[in-house]
Structures are given as C-alpha cells and as structure tokens.
Length: 251
Length: 250
Image (cartoon, helix red, strand yellow):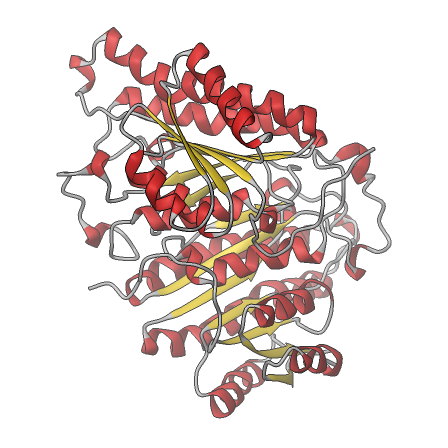
C-alpha cells in the first residue's frame, strides 16, 4: 500500500505550513513563497514575526505567528497543538530555525558547542518528531530541513559546532525519510551555500571571484528549492539533500 | 562582469527547449511538462515523434520533431541547426536519449559495451557540446541530463555498460557546469530510480524495497526536470538530483 501519489504541478492551495525561524531572512522568504503558491502559514520564531504575518495576510492567505524556542520541547509541542487547534492539520514543515557561530575550535567552550547543536540539531529533532507524529497519523506530509553546504565541505568561516550540527541534519533526514516513506511522509533537506542574509552580513566571500555562478545566494534561491520539495512536484523524492550553492560544491 | 538572476517562480513562456529521447516514456513526459509551462519544444528521437508532437501542441505551444541519433555528430549538429532555424534560440536542453541492456557481465561483448557508451555518454557529450556552443554565445541556458541511480549504486537489473555510461553522465555535468557557470549556463543531472516506462517493461521491481512503496512514474522525473530547467533553480548547478522514492539516499 502506498500513500504517495504521482508528481504534479506545484500548488499549495488548502495546505497548512509551519516555518520555524520564519521571522526574517531565508525563513521569511520561504513563508512568503509558500503563501504565494496558496499555503496558509504558521510562522514560528523567537524573534517578532508580526511583519511577515501581516505580509502573508495581505497576500490573501491565513497566517499566525507563534513565539517558540525550538530547543524547548514543551514549546514545540505547544506550537504543533496551537497549529492543529487553529488550522486542523499540518501538511508542511520547514525546519529552518538555526544559528551560526564563528568561534575558533580551540576557543570553543562546551557551553558554546551545546548552544549551537541544541538549536540547529536537537531543535530540528524536536520539531520534526512532533510534526511527524501528526503526519504519520494522516499518512501524508512534507518535511524540509535546512542544512548547509558547510556541513559537507567543512565550512568557510563557520565553527565546528555549526558544521557538525548541519552535517547532522543531512543524516537525520535520511533516517526519518526511511521511516516516513511507507506512510506518505516525505523528509528532505536543502543545503544552502553562502547567502546574502543577516547571518552572513559581516563576511565577504568574494563571490564574484570565487563562486562558479559569481554571486552570493539569495533567500529566494533557497525558498524556490524548499517550495519544490514541499510541493507535489517532488512526490518521488525523499531522504535527499538538495545543494543550492551556486556550484561551490559539486558532489 | 555578469551575474545570474535570482530564482523566481516557474514560467517558461517564450522559451525554447530541446528534449532528446522525447518519443516516449520519461522524455515524452518531460516534453509535455515543459510545454504545459509555456515552452516551445523540439522533440528528438530515433523513434516516431508524432504522438509527442501532438501532445505538446495541445498546450498551445509550438513543437518541432527532429529525428536524430545522438551518437552521430552530424545528426546532432543538424538537430541544433533545425531548432535555431525554427525558434532562433535554445534556452533549455533536456538530454534524455539512452538505451538500456541487461546482458550479464561475462556475456557482455565489446560491441554492446561500445554501443551503450556511444549513445548514453558520448551522445550526451555531443548534444551538450552543440547546444552549449549556442548558449555560450547568448550567455544563458539550462541543461538537464538524465543520469540514473544505477550509476550510483551499481544497478539492480541493468548491465555494467549501462551503469558505467550513466555514472559518466553524473561526472560530465560537473565538468561542464564549472566551465558554464560564469557564462550563465546551468548544467545539472537527474538520477531517476526505478520508473515505469517502455525501457523497464517486464522488470519485476518490488515496491516493498522502496521507502515510498511505489515505482516511479515518468511525471515524477518530468517535474524535477522542469524545476531544474526553470528559473526556480537559479542557484543550482553541477548537481545530481536523486528522484528515486528513497531507494538511495546519497
């Protein structure tokens, strides 16, 4: 028995999506892009999300902001519960919440290591587990986790805690994809290369000189890839990490 | 100094695409899907093309059929020339032409080995090079080559010749992607897992072996090809996209 239907044109009308880390940058752009294709969106962040929520509502979609620290299991369970109370179901999760760190290896404290892996990796575990429980029951759902090309190539300027956490995300999706496949629950990752966002504002990657496509990534580049993976256009794709990195890394 | 556009929603209005191996199966589905999004399509194959041409035209776009053996340089050049004469430009190439055999290794003749590499890998080289030349002059283009999961994991039922030829495709796109990127040309591959088509007819794939519990359909590959041929993937190049139901996880 398969719950997976054949791929078709992108269309998210009637679907409910949760985006963690959705207040700004890549997360906000993903929220906007999913709404453009018809989805109603729950924006979750520790930062204020009023602005993106208002923007989505102006697009004619329903939106809700929920303040949630993804490392706090009670808050994550509450996020899922509030979404179900309000919208009745969850079709899509984009687990995007994350932080970056640039501490040199020998200066890294155990606390510094734990803080980043807790948010970037354990936070993904908690969010995906809570949503997966609901999706498995409905035998339908699309989960996309945001990894990083840094997790594959060792990073340019990011610290080992960040690298390890993002590599962990790429492995994590494979494991959950195998478990979700028979129930029609898809689990994939997007691995962005260096993007023009607040997180990278202080770094000059000299993209024109160093990157094959000669520019930094933009939030829109990641958002269109995430859209593809949460949509019915990718109904035979699971357990994969899609590199969106301007050709910086070719596996 | 040029730099490529940021990604945006899929829209192929006004674009021209060449699809090789477009007479049936995955190639025909790709031709229909690109047409659905507005592209004019040049359909190429050694098999009869009329069915795909009619299906493409039903979307209100233009279609041109060109019979072409991709292992013959003069026929490939003719294909590109015919496409440019009819549509003045080529924005998209989906190189899907391939043959498959399942000869056991010790029975595999040199002739069979050579023929598989000639069509599946050299044919890809010839098609990509001819189209790339045109795209490089225009500084814009999207190339998608159809590889195979068998090139990654050794194949379930395909012969060593097929497996090797498809692994070559995955490597070829990386080499070309690096050279092409500064010219605004994208080169990616799709590695399909088991897909229902004339090429896989009669093969007893077991859906229980596949995490998504079904065999792929041509549409599954076509939507992925559309993504990579569109501006939705404007920061993706040199990548092999695995569309396999979770059989192989990279």
